[in-house]
Image (cartoon, protein in one colour):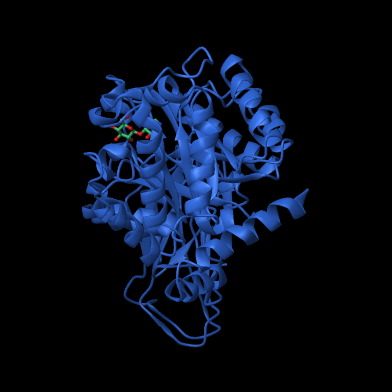
Length: 461
Ligand code: 9MR
């Protein structure tokens, strides 16, 4: 099983390397570096972790810094769609898409082309064509765009969202002109233009097993049986918190069993805003579950989030009152879902351990307590190799303890986190030497001694 994905990843890497000799160095050094971020964790598992980027995103340096550091796959959010690339019949505009490609290449990221044929973001001239001209227009569009980007893309979403919410093929311009055969025709045309790009059908609400994913399964079964070039299925994965389908993994496995790659192409997980902590925690659980599903299915090639952070997500615009759907907040700070994703990818999110005790000081303390009071005697030993000239020892008293008097030191404040400082006659401590001081305190039952001591800013053993 593992071999399958390793092989897939290898093929994918080859595709990236053929983008140009320029990329070779970048990809190699990236893979070799002990980097951080989701992409590094994902690559160690032979998958990618991607994001969508739009042209306007590229002028936000905070966003692009996160994108470049965390993700190794880019899907253009809008820039390769028909309304941008061929706004009028035979007039092509690849400038915006080229900018995304350029950003991706300069950051050693691969690219999922999105998309060639879609009922939406389709210029009106296409749907206004006489139906006997639609096939030629579609084939010309696919051929011209896929040829323009030939060799630069890892994959193409050749047909996007072909099904309606009930699982019937949408009766769009393409279906109306050609029937269901437009899909095979689109795939064949794309394959002829860019034989090395992985060719996908991509849709939403096909993540779990349901009528719509059943319809997609039937369609791709037939396409495979007919020898139509199709390589993968994109599961968009626009989720609502707490609603990742329990059948998602089994659903992915059945597509994989047809000999297809599966990709999570547009992951986000929306909630009411402002986000509650409970929903952010559920979102973390959801993201981890999606990543785990991908890792569990050898033919799952990667996960892409739709956008970098909540500030650039499409959700608030499309679902008023909802948002917070990504791993990064409005300031591009990681959210709980980022940590759960990193953990699911095999990373560690344990907090930085405290520095090991210094070898330059050692503290012992003894306490003598009675029902309402205590005395404590503290000895500092200079275990370092240089003399201490003036000392300041910080420690925290147990709750309820209040210092009433001190000797051989001045201590302030009287409760909580306190600092004891030398008096004029005991500030110098030679290597190997010790100095002692003490205090009397009242207490309310907790007579424990401080756990940590910090001498002149350094923790002591
Ligand atoms: O993110 C895209 C957004 O900027 C556009 O306004 C929107 C128009 O439909 O399309 C968004 O991306 C869609 C993607 O292309 C296909 N799946 C659903 C995505 C969200 O609508």
